[in-house]
Amino acid sequence: MEHTESILATVLNMTAAFNKGDISGILCCYEPDAVVMGEPGKPSQGEGDLRAMFAGFIAMKPSFTYSGHEVVQAGDLALHIAPWRMGGVGPDGAPIEQQGLSLAVLRRQTDGRWLMVIDQPHGDALFRVQQR
Image (cartoon, rainbow, N blue to C red; front, top):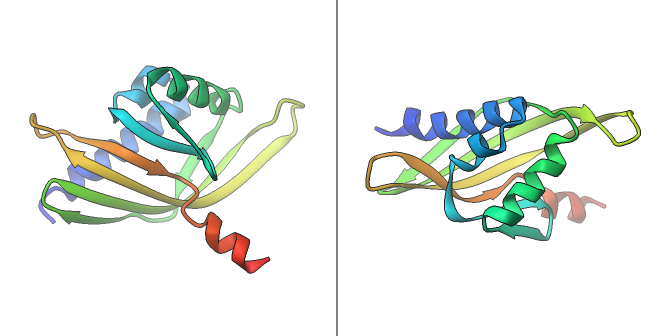
């Protein structure tokens, strides 16, 4: 698609800001009313809630990697799909490893930028529950 690189750049810019602990940089990649699922079944929305949620993750000193990216675009909307892994440190100093399937909906803005509207990093959570 014609905008795949711009869409992917938004996601990668957010991830780079996350890895640096830059909450303002993270928020620049989202629309003001975006919804982010910090954990399955717990949506966060609005700058205050998103800042608090992201601060909790940043306290773990996360490092994210992706094992691939797929972008599906329809006009001014796009879906980004990517398997991810995160390493970090828990409150007790023990290492934390997490992984999941990220599903993010992005919208092209009037200035041409792509921003995330919905971010569900636990897109495979329902599948994992069904496997138990």
